[in-house]
Image 1 (cartoon, rainbow, N blue to C red):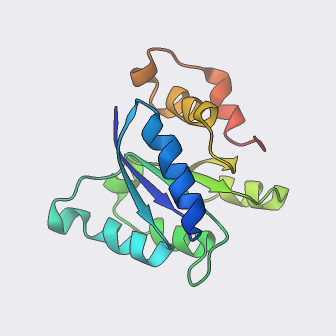
Image 2 (cartoon, rainbow, N blue to C red; image 1 turned 180 degrees about the vertical axis):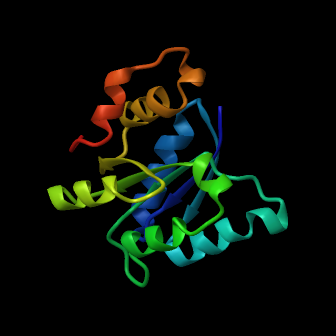
Image 3 (spheres, one colour; image 1 turned 135 degrees about the vertical axis):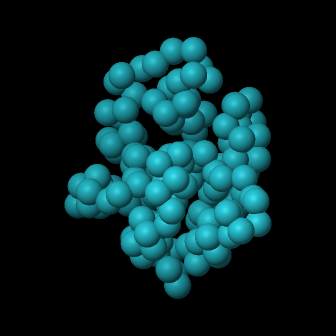
Length: 150
Protein backbone atom coordinates (compact mmCIF):
# COMPACT_ATOMS: atom_id res chain seq x y z
CA UNK A 1 0.00 0.00 0.00
CA UNK A 2 1.16 3.52 -0.82
CA UNK A 3 0.97 5.10 2.63
CA UNK A 4 0.91 8.80 1.77
CA UNK A 5 0.04 10.68 -1.41
CA UNK A 6 0.35 14.46 -1.79
CA UNK A 7 -1.98 16.02 -4.32
CA UNK A 8 -1.03 19.59 -5.23
CA UNK A 9 -3.58 21.46 -7.34
CA UNK A 10 -5.08 24.94 -7.02
CA UNK A 11 -8.51 23.96 -8.32
CA UNK A 12 -10.78 22.88 -5.45
CA UNK A 13 -13.10 20.78 -7.64
CA UNK A 14 -10.18 18.99 -9.28
CA UNK A 15 -8.62 18.26 -5.89
CA UNK A 16 -11.91 16.81 -4.69
CA UNK A 17 -12.41 14.65 -7.79
CA UNK A 18 -8.84 13.39 -7.85
CA UNK A 19 -8.85 12.70 -4.12
CA UNK A 20 -12.04 10.69 -4.55
CA UNK A 21 -10.52 8.66 -7.40
CA UNK A 22 -7.40 7.93 -5.34
CA UNK A 23 -9.46 7.03 -2.26
CA UNK A 24 -11.51 4.52 -4.26
CA UNK A 25 -8.32 2.70 -5.25
CA UNK A 26 -7.39 0.04 -2.70
CA UNK A 27 -3.62 0.65 -2.86
CA UNK A 28 -3.56 4.17 -1.37
CA UNK A 29 -3.99 4.99 2.31
CA UNK A 30 -3.51 8.68 3.22
CA UNK A 31 -4.26 11.40 0.69
CA UNK A 32 -3.19 14.92 1.58
CA UNK A 33 -4.29 17.78 -0.62
CA UNK A 34 -2.67 21.18 -0.99
CA UNK A 35 -4.05 24.18 -2.91
CA UNK A 36 -0.59 25.38 -3.94
CA UNK A 37 3.11 24.79 -4.05
CA UNK A 38 4.10 27.06 -1.15
CA UNK A 39 2.04 25.24 1.46
CA UNK A 40 3.09 21.85 0.07
CA UNK A 41 6.75 22.86 0.37
CA UNK A 42 6.17 23.97 3.97
CA UNK A 43 4.75 20.53 4.68
CA UNK A 44 7.67 18.76 2.98
CA UNK A 45 10.24 20.88 4.82
CA UNK A 46 8.62 20.03 8.16
CA UNK A 47 8.82 16.26 7.69
CA UNK A 48 12.12 15.69 9.47
CA UNK A 49 11.40 18.26 12.15
CA UNK A 50 7.92 17.05 13.03
CA UNK A 51 8.36 13.33 12.35
CA UNK A 52 5.66 13.49 9.71
CA UNK A 53 5.55 10.52 7.37
CA UNK A 54 7.28 11.13 4.06
CA UNK A 55 5.04 10.91 1.03
CA UNK A 56 5.67 8.05 -1.35
CA UNK A 57 3.89 9.81 -4.21
CA UNK A 58 3.34 13.45 -5.18
CA UNK A 59 0.92 14.44 -7.93
CA UNK A 60 1.67 18.01 -9.05
CA UNK A 61 -0.30 20.41 -11.23
CA UNK A 62 1.75 22.85 -13.29
CA UNK A 63 -0.67 25.71 -13.86
CA UNK A 64 -1.29 27.31 -10.48
CA UNK A 65 -1.31 30.94 -9.30
CA UNK A 66 1.13 32.27 -6.72
CA UNK A 67 3.63 29.43 -7.14
CA UNK A 68 3.21 27.36 -10.27
CA UNK A 69 4.41 23.79 -10.66
CA UNK A 70 7.69 24.80 -12.27
CA UNK A 71 8.49 27.13 -9.37
CA UNK A 72 7.57 24.36 -6.93
CA UNK A 73 9.98 22.01 -8.72
CA UNK A 74 12.83 24.53 -8.45
CA UNK A 75 12.40 24.49 -4.66
CA UNK A 76 11.59 20.78 -4.46
CA UNK A 77 14.87 19.72 -6.06
CA UNK A 78 16.72 21.55 -3.25
CA UNK A 79 15.07 19.44 -0.54
CA UNK A 80 16.83 16.65 1.31
CA UNK A 81 18.13 13.93 -1.03
CA UNK A 82 16.57 11.24 1.14
CA UNK A 83 13.12 12.71 0.57
CA UNK A 84 13.50 13.08 -3.19
CA UNK A 85 15.04 9.64 -3.69
CA UNK A 86 12.22 7.89 -1.88
CA UNK A 87 9.33 9.91 -3.30
CA UNK A 88 7.89 9.54 -6.77
CA UNK A 89 6.74 12.85 -8.23
CA UNK A 90 4.37 12.75 -11.18
CA UNK A 91 3.25 15.90 -12.95
CA UNK A 92 -0.53 15.70 -13.34
CA UNK A 93 -1.59 18.55 -15.59
CA UNK A 94 -3.90 19.72 -18.32
CA UNK A 95 -0.92 20.97 -20.35
CA UNK A 96 -0.35 19.03 -23.56
CA UNK A 97 2.55 21.24 -24.63
CA UNK A 98 5.40 18.95 -25.81
CA UNK A 99 7.95 21.44 -24.46
CA UNK A 100 6.48 20.98 -20.94
CA UNK A 101 6.96 17.21 -21.23
CA UNK A 102 10.55 17.64 -22.41
CA UNK A 103 11.30 20.23 -19.75
CA UNK A 104 9.98 17.95 -17.01
CA UNK A 105 12.25 15.10 -18.12
CA UNK A 106 15.29 17.20 -17.21
CA UNK A 107 14.25 18.17 -13.69
CA UNK A 108 15.67 16.29 -10.74
CA UNK A 109 13.01 14.42 -8.85
CA UNK A 110 10.36 14.30 -11.59
CA UNK A 111 9.44 10.72 -12.40
CA UNK A 112 6.61 11.13 -14.90
CA UNK A 113 4.12 13.35 -16.69
CA UNK A 114 0.47 12.50 -17.22
CA UNK A 115 -2.49 14.49 -18.39
CA UNK A 116 -5.63 15.20 -16.42
CA UNK A 117 -8.01 13.82 -15.55
CA UNK A 118 -6.64 11.22 -13.18
CA UNK A 119 -8.21 7.81 -13.72
CA UNK A 120 -8.02 4.39 -12.09
CA UNK A 121 -6.07 3.19 -15.15
CA UNK A 122 -3.50 5.97 -14.74
CA UNK A 123 -3.16 5.10 -11.05
CA UNK A 124 -2.62 1.46 -12.02
CA UNK A 125 0.12 2.53 -14.43
CA UNK A 126 1.83 4.55 -11.69
CA UNK A 127 1.61 1.55 -9.34
CA UNK A 128 2.93 -0.88 -11.94
CA UNK A 129 5.83 1.42 -12.77
CA UNK A 130 6.98 2.62 -9.35
CA UNK A 131 5.26 0.44 -6.80
CA UNK A 132 5.26 -2.87 -8.67
CA UNK A 133 5.91 -4.73 -5.41
CA UNK A 134 2.31 -3.80 -4.54
CA UNK A 135 0.89 -5.15 -7.78
CA UNK A 136 3.10 -8.25 -8.00
CA UNK A 137 3.89 -7.46 -11.60
CA UNK A 138 6.17 -5.04 -13.36
CA UNK A 139 5.19 -3.52 -16.65
CA UNK A 140 8.23 -2.17 -18.48
CA UNK A 141 5.96 -0.43 -20.96
CA UNK A 142 4.24 1.46 -18.16
CA UNK A 143 7.27 3.69 -17.58
CA UNK A 144 7.21 4.89 -21.17
CA UNK A 145 3.52 5.70 -20.96
CA UNK A 146 4.07 8.06 -18.01
CA UNK A 147 5.91 10.40 -20.36
CA UNK A 148 3.24 10.35 -23.04
CA UNK A 149 0.08 12.38 -23.40
CA UNK A 150 -2.20 9.83 -21.75
